[in-house]
Image (cartoon, rainbow, N blue to C red; front, top):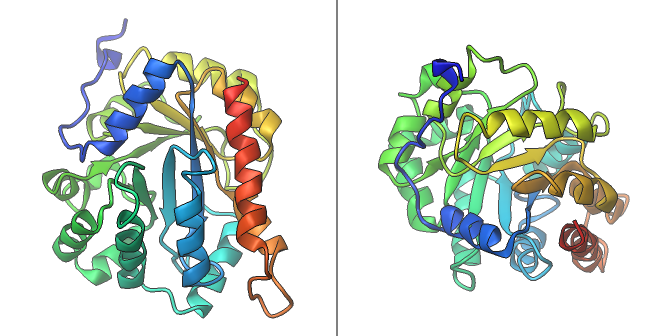
Length: 286
């Protein structure tokens, strides 16, 4: 094996919930389901209801999106969700309030905040990390901070006991991978294709090959996302990945349950959670 690609130890920061969940999944010999929703889409109350219902629907890890005005990695579906959330008055402080509310009834399900650095920087890095940890956040996915900028957020997050989850893409080559792995913890998020979220369907064979290669270099669990929209795709990817991430398909389901003014129709939460249950059931069959 290339010495540069020898297995990399995870950085030492873990709130406990993420590693515990993957340990349980490993014992059960099954893949996990990770779902993404945008905080405040279409309103705070609906988000709170979805957060409360996702674990009961079979979700293992929740990604809660922090809306940003220029989400470079997100496609039109999530961009529209961001706009709806801004219209509903979402701010970073209110997102942390959502997490606090969620933790009143759920101390077991890992919850990760996903977004971009600018809102965190504006909030204040140390204040954000302290508040996020106290609210019950387990980890961060910040897509626009590369390993070269670890001092900005990654290292401080580790000191606060928050996992910093790194993205690995099909264009991450052997020279680049060790730098990504050195600053990763919790799990790796493998982006199954180039491009933006929700842009096209995932192809299983290249993903299987990529997962096999990653496991030669890290002991971290590998979650696969981008382009996974149906129970059938979830089932296929779950046969090799430690977890499967679904985001845009859930956001689309939310959008389909909005009225002409962008307000939640009755039954939105039930419909969305019912769809999530079909994804969880597909993993059980993988």
